[in-house]
Structure formats: C-alpha cells, structure tokens
Image (cartoon, rainbow, N blue to C red):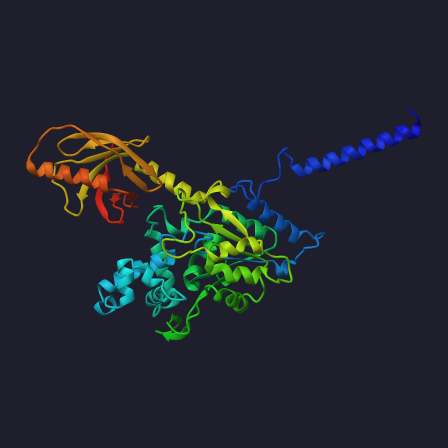
Length: 463
C-alpha cells in the first residue's frame, strides 16, 4: 500500500469512527433508542402521523417549518382528552346539583327540563341545534353565584364524585395517550388550548392541574359575568345573559375571538368538532393536521360513533376524514394504555384496600340485628367468604377498578330464627345486586347497585 492509499484509508477510517460516535451519541449514553415521546401508543399510522407532522413543522430546514409564535394546537375536551359517556362530566356535576336543589324547590322541580334531567331523559335535554335543554340546566346550576362560589362548588364535587362505570374520580380519568401528545407538543414549542362546548368557568377550575393548560388557554361556552361589590368586596357574578355556545360552528368563532390565531393542529372526536377541523385544515396558509379520536374500546372505555349514550355523535366528520386527510385514531388498536398512572394507581390502591375482613353495619338502610354478625372477607385473589349471621358462605368476586361483581356463592344449610334468616336473605340479595364499591376516608366500605345507590355499609374488622 503506497502512502497516498494509506492516508486515504486512514481518513475514511476516522470519518467512519466519527460518524459512528455521532450516531452512538444520538442513540444515547445508555445504548438505547431516544425516548419515545408517545409510549402509550402502539406503532401505527396514527402515531407516525403525529410525530411526522410535529417534526416537519418544527425543523428549521423543513419546507413546512412554522415559527413558534404560530404553533397553535386546539383540543376538544369531552371525548378527546377524557370520556364524555354516559354523560359529559360537567353535565354529571349539573345533574347532581339540580337534583339537590329541586328537592328543596317545588317551582324549580316543575320545570320540564329539570324533570327531564332528574329522570335521565337525555334525548330531551340534547334536542335542538345547540342542546337547548342541556344548556338550560347548565345555566340553572351555574348562574347567580359568584365565580369563587362556583369554583368551590366544582372543587368539592370533584373530591367525592366518581364515574358510574369506571368507578374512579372524574379528574383522574384523562387519556394517557393524549396527555403524552400535549407534553410532546409543548416540548416542541406549541401552545396548547382547550376549545370545548363545555363551560369555560367549569374547565378553568381544573384545566391547569389536570392537563397543564392554564385558564387563559381555555375557550368554552360562556355567559355574561357582572361585577358587584358585596360587603365591601369586589366579586364577579355569573348570569344567564348573552350565552355563547362554543360548539360546532361556534368553535371557529371562539378560536378567532379568544385566541386570535388560526390553529395548525386540531384534535376532536365528534361531529361537534367538524367545523373546527375544517377551519384548521382547509386553505390554511400554514401546514396543518386534524385528528379524530374514534371510541372503539368497549372494554377499557366505550365503543360508539353514530349512537353514543349522550353526546359525542361521530358520523359526518368520520365520513369526511379520508377526503380531508384527517387522522382517525382507533382507540382499541392504537392505544396500548388508556388511563394515566393516577387512575391506574387509584384503582389498584382501592383493590388492595378492599382486601380484608369486613363487618356489615347496614343493609339497604334497614340496619342489622345487634350481635348477629354478617361478615365479608375479601382475599387478594378475589376470593370471598364469611358469615351470613346463620350460615357460612364462600365464592369469588370479579374486581376491576371500583367495579365488583360477586359470583355464585356456596352456603351451608343451617336454619335459624326468622329474624336472622331474614337478615341472611337481605345480605345475599345485596351481594347479588352489588356492581360497585367505594371506601370512604372514614374507612367505611359501601357496596352500591347499578344506579349508584348504597345497598350495604361495612366497617373493617381488626385482625
């Protein structure tokens, strides 16, 4: 090998070594791939579309580069960032409030829409172009109080209320994959906004704590707020006047009025988001992308499109998606996980807390006989056993989150006094009706039926 050949070979070797070092540094100091920003997503076209779009608009050498000041992403809330079935969470709050108020106010109880709310007639509440009955219930339960009073009311509700199917606190039921999208966008210079048909004041109570989205980045339905001096203190009072519904065609108008910039990334899940998707992606002078969350997972959440339990109908936007190039996320296939760690930990913690031996204190509001112990012992494997007060029993329970279902129970066949046999019958029937449980801060265990009514109260026995 002559000197020139040797020098060329040496140069190539060092160039290769340098390139390898750069690749190794990029891969990471631990020799692993760079951290996946969307680990709760399966490898799919949906995930790739999100990552590809973000890379294109944030790379300075890209023809699609968008300056940071124009990186605006808008998210519908209900059904996009957290569930909206069987009813949107704000409606669940309003239904609880209207039920309490109408019980003490006969005039309020006579209102047709209040009656529909108390009877669960959501078809009547959702009738009209802007869900007129629903908006009236929202107005009745939100207006007349100060903004501070309303905030306190919402915060108190979140502390105790739980989702009827999933059995977890509402503010823990956010979609982990969408939380990862929010974080990834913000890490790449995007400003993230909620643009939702829900009430702006309701969402602003918790949006920063739950999503990291500050109150000033929440666009929602609003009514006029008036300033007053009460007892020498300035307050803002919520009214029913000048209602703006931030839904359907109202969403692009709300974006223009409250954000002032056209989004380049839009996330929704229903036909109520179609106008916002169109505004974001049609004739936008900047590169743009629209994404629809399609609820297809009846096991981990819900499966619906044209026939939701309340709101969230998805027909027109789904049909338009292929021609518009909108990304459609199949929740069942595209998401490895659905819930955040807080929800998963809460569910596992509740199950662990349930394990042990419990003494029945009340059955269906009728109390129990003193010194006639009915007990329930729950094993870590879901086994159950105990005393009915007369007989012994054993069996299994299916426990998922805060849902519980007692399987067939085998009992001994001893007879006892009529009163004790009556208690045994009520005890067994209550177990058969139980669908959910909760453990209060007091340590008391409550079993509930499918309507959410308490049917048994128990206290934990010391070992």
